[in-house]
Amino acid sequence: MAFDILRAFVTVLVVADHSVLAYALLSPAAAPRSPLHPWLAGIPIVDSHRLIVFDLFGLFTDTFFMSLMFLLSGLFVGPSLSSKGSRRFLRGRALRLGAPLVVVALLTPLAYYPAYRASTADPSALAFWREWLSLGFWPVGPMWFVGVLLGFDVVAAGLHGFAPVLFERIGRLTSVGRRRPTAVFAVLLLVSAAAYLPLRGAFGPDSWVSVGPFAVQGSRALHYLVYFLVGVAIGDCRIDNGLLAPDGRLVRRWFLWTLSALGLFVLYVAFLVGLAPGGWTAGLPALARRLIPGLGFVLCCGAISFAMLAGFQRFANAPTPVLTSLSRNAYGIYMMHYGFVMWLQYALLPAALPAAGKAAIVLSVTLAASWTATAALRRIPAVDRVI
Image (cartoon, rainbow, N blue to C red; front, side, top):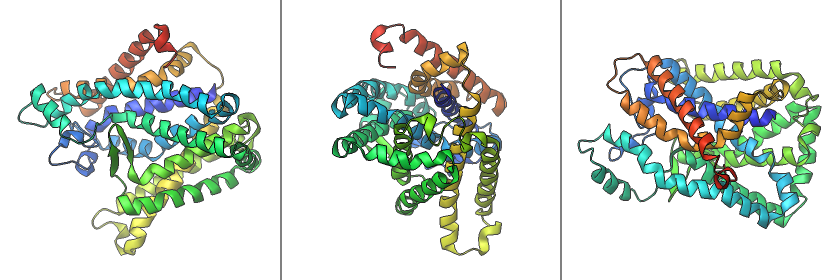
């Protein structure tokens, strides 16, 4: 139950992140924006009312939340593969992930249309559709995660078919985390750094690779795979007996992990601020200025993820009606929220409200609307079996 609640919590963080980025002070200027398609930027709608606190929130969430989502998604893959076999497992994942990806992809233009209207001289639906078809790929917004996760499931099924005991053996190695979580943490840092830093050098920290409806941040593709496979390994040796055991050192020392994670994030922010022109990092060699932000991301991602896992395993084991409903509807909320976010941000552009007020409206209305819509759709038995 703790990890279902954690997954729901991270989903809410995703909704919050998308809700507030239109009101960030620095991020819109830093986000990569195509001169031909500015509405496809990382922050499609930019409001004139902004607060720098939203930049800090966006940096914090971006440091860990999608990596943690991949780890959580991997936790129950091993037992499912063992009980179902690779073919049956993949059929189930194709229904659970592939079918919603196709449906939401077909509706995604409706979510991006307000961003297009806010950035073009010809806001007509026909002009937008022509530009959409000229892109050469099919943007799917946050559903990129579902497409990548489906690909990772294929990788896991292939590895299981090739070497059925592979995850079990790796899982035994992660079981040492019950007594020595720092050892598992150190291995995770080394492997994720090896997966992330070379691709960061090749693609840069922010560029995306897109093929049809499939997209992934180029520098993080292997990093995300590492976190997913770590989740598979942890889950394959039984969660209660390994790193995440309720009586293990990670969970018992959740407070120290949380303090350490926050401290590392503060140092990470300080270094990023120092990278500004005239900042305190100006005297460092150019290689160090490029390398340290990548290492900071790897460290913060691992530390915050471990702190979240420990804290929720320690305190989130008492279900309530609200948390149960949120966890059951989290997948649908993730799928539906982006359209609500974009249309609400667009509608609030002319409103003379402070940035915090606009962000609060977008977040609360989006969460309520997507939650309600998901609960209503799940009353249909065929839909309930998927989401």
